[in-house]
Image 1 (cartoon, one colour):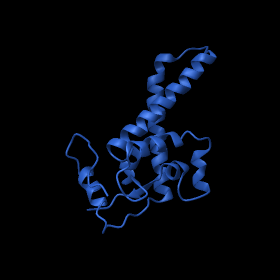
Image 2 (cartoon, helix red, strand yellow):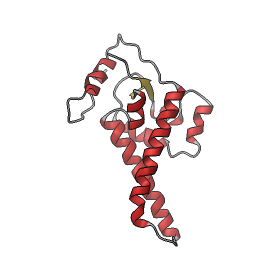
Image 3 (cartoon, one colour):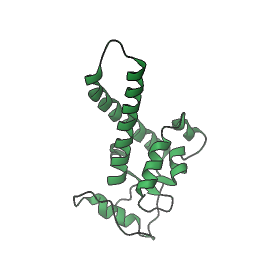
Image 4 (cartoon, one colour):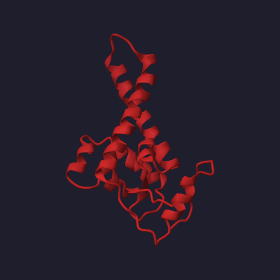
Length: 154
């Protein structure tokens, strides 16, 4: 396993915590469904507020089909940037920071950019949030071969 850590540009405790995760003697504990649900609510709320703020510029009384397509693509782009930025840089979104959870590969290593991009685009699959009804992991976990774990306490 690789011993590198998230490049944050700062000396944050997340970097040393991630290195500790890679220590094979430490057991990784999956996040609970409630933690995952709270992560989802927090991240969706942040995205909603962010999109409202950004869309104020484009508010009109009549919207053409082209503008609707643009708005959808713009929203999708913001969502992709949000998840890719936070999960690649820190291994967690603001929701995961609050619930003290972290994204890792199925083996417990730092996810690659490919893992994170796959994870992010898997979220666009229709009814993906309902995938938790059919199992413990969501499709965005299984497709990208990642998991969300409780951040170990030092």
